[in-house]
Structures are given as structure tokens and as C-alpha cells.
Length: 252
Ligand SMILES: Nc1ncnc2c1ncn2[C@@H]1O[C@H](COP(=O)(O)OP(=O)(O)OP(=O)(O)O)[C@@H](O)[C@H]1O
Ligand SMILES: [Mg+2]
Image (cartoon, rainbow, N blue to C red; front, top):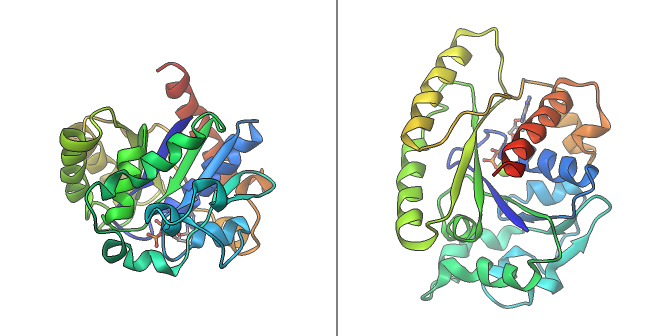
């Protein structure tokens, strides 16, 4: 199982949208996928059609339940859902080794899936630390709008610490530019800035970028996946992105 975290400390940069697209896109390519929602907003869980008030990622992080109790079998992929209790995870999970709870739990089901996709909150809390410690690869989402670069240097410092102390093998696979409008000057400018930051972080900006597309919010509120609208810009771009990602994945 490859464990992939979708991250950025900044909010509203399409982390959840990207995690949904990757989970459903990989499932449609016949991979066995487990998705984990680590955000108290539970947007990923809601858009996936997950159940409320069930054992979820909070119970796994705090070690209260076995991971198998938290897995919901949805039509496309399996889900470990989020709920509001995650907003106090830093208080609830406050013991030595707290960053290793997810890694330990996932070791029990490592051979059951091809991919585990983790949607993270816009934060650098202990849930995100668990995500970075357990992951093989991360994908950083960045919108191509003003202030898009905010928080990236802080993330970079956190990644340095994770590499040094907790998960030296973690690969920063790349930066995915989302909500992109190629016609705007700001979009082009941010693309150049992100390439420089990618260099500092020893990674790349993916060739594929995700164009702005109004169907995204419609698909999410209807609990459909973006590939149910195959002719839209978002379905085309996310499909290309998954191909690009898998190309790198298959060839190391
Ligand atoms: N390519 C796109 N085109 C248009 N709207 C988009 C696109 N991608 C995402 N959005 C919209 O932008 C908003 C933020 O997206 P999303 O919730 O995926 O971001 P996020 O990074 O997960 O946010 P948060 O940090 O709050 O968890 C949502 O309303 C979503 O529908
Ligand atoms: Mg989100």
C-alpha cells in the first residue's frame, strides 16, 4: 500500500477536492483505495457520502478503537471518516509517541489496499503530523490566487523536522497547482514563484494543473465524483494529473 497525504497549511486550496478526485480516480482504475479524512470540517466524508456519528479517524488517532472498526465500505472506496472531535485532537492526543498512532494502525491493514489517500486540515496539528509520519509521499496543493504562497515556508520547515526526526523516507512528490486560470497574470506569476519554492523543497511543480471549473462545487454538494462529469475541465485535468502521478509512481 502506498500512503499519500494531501497537504497545505493554507485553507481553500483544493486539498479535499484533490483527495476526492484521486481516491475516486484510482478506484475507477481498479485500485483498492482507502481514504482517510483528518479534517474536523469532514468535507471529504460528507462529499463521499460517509455516515455520521460512527467510529472515525479521531478514534484511530487516540487509539480508542481498532482501525478495522472505523472502515466504511462505500461503493468506490473505503473511508475512515472525520468528525468535529478532531478540532481538539492536540489536547486529546498528548502522550509520548503521539505522532506514530496512524502509522501503527495502518500497519495492521497494509496489504488490504493499493493506496491510502489522506485528506488533511488546513493546519499543522498532530493529525497532520501523524499523516506525514505514516506517508510514503505527499502532494502539496496550491491555488493560483493571491497569497497562495502563504504557509508554504512553514510547511517546508515542518517537513525538514519530519525528515530529520520521524520519517526520513517521506517523498515530497510535487506541488499541484489548482483553481488555475491560465489567462490571468497572477496565475502565471504564482506558477513561477511555486517553481522556486519547489526547488527549495527538493521537489517539482507537476506539469498538469487543475483549471477553475464550476462543476466542482456542484459535484461535491450532490455527493458525486468529478468523473461522473467526464467532459468537464476538472475531470479532464484530474484524469491527466492521476496519469502523471502514476507515471512517476510506477517508474519510481
Ligand atoms: N478547480 C476548481 N475550480 C473551481 N472551484 C474549485 C476548484 N477546486 C476547488 N474548488 C472549490 O474551492 C473551494 C475550496 O476547495 P476545497 O474544499 O477542496 O479546499 P481545501 O483546501 O480542502 O479547503 P480547507 O483548507 O478548508 O479544507 C470549494 O468550494 C471547492 O468546491
Ligand atoms: Mg479540505
